[in-house]
Image (cartoon, rainbow, N blue to C red; front, side):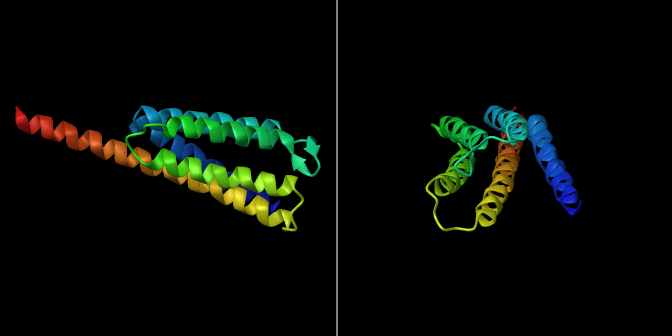
Length: 147
């Protein structure tokens, strides 16, 4: 029952960052936040009874696709947040690989790292949204001063 509080706090944080990205972000921020919400719901759908050698294969596929998606979003990005998000997502995928190769690491610690990385990804999207918002604000003030 105590885990429900953490889940609700995480959901509120994710939805608030996504709304911030949709309201104030640029195109890449909106695409990243939209994909993150879709991947979140996809991960909720695939969490039940799909283990392969101790690895939740549905989550592994969602995380692999997320890595590819964020890597494509980072390709020639004018800001650095998509590169950071891609690197963080790579940490999550490597956690899955460690589970798959039966490394002697406590499984709870890997799941903790994967969850914390998820929060860092949301934070990076929020930070990128703030930068995009401030850049647009400065550009509009600059063009207003030129007239």
